[in-house]
Image 1: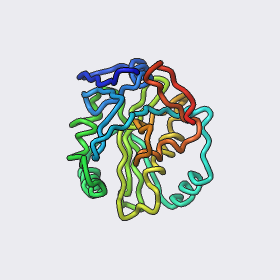
Image 2 (image 1 turned 90 degrees about the horizontal axis):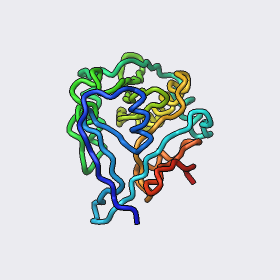
Image 3 (image 1 turned 90 degrees about the vertical axis):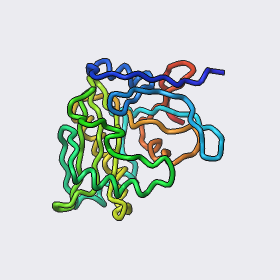
Image 4 (image 1 turned 135 degrees about the horizontal axis):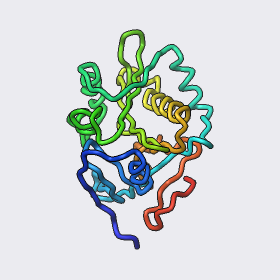
Length: 218
């Protein structure tokens, strides 16, 4: 049996090509705090197996349901830019986090640090609007040949639009147009969980902790 991983370090600045290597080894980060772990406890005292994922942007094509999400939100507009935290994003986060019943995050800074535009790597964001009203946003890091989703949030009262999926689709399109090969959407679990939506993208691979190999997701 492979020993459980639970590693972490603090770093202020990481070059783009090194970020690619860290993501490929199962690392993620919230602000300056970098981490990787292979199991996590459940609320009933059990354990889940953490499964890092990545999407092959060359082979990824959208499913019928994902294309429906794009059509459903065709009336909205969006923009990409450097990650910047402002009052509108913080207010949206406060509404978004009401969806959670446990492990409720305190603030956007928990995931992004106090100033994501200053590192430790190139953090960008996509914002989605209905007219002037901010409906959703997601944050992602850009490396040399890969990118990694950090956090997404959306207006709970507009959940029927599947805005979390929508911003992921926008990230995929943006990263592909930027010439990247991989997008790391974050951790899921081997067992069924609320993160299963991350497994629905074609071209998805998972990291086998025991060998360090990336394999096609069944």
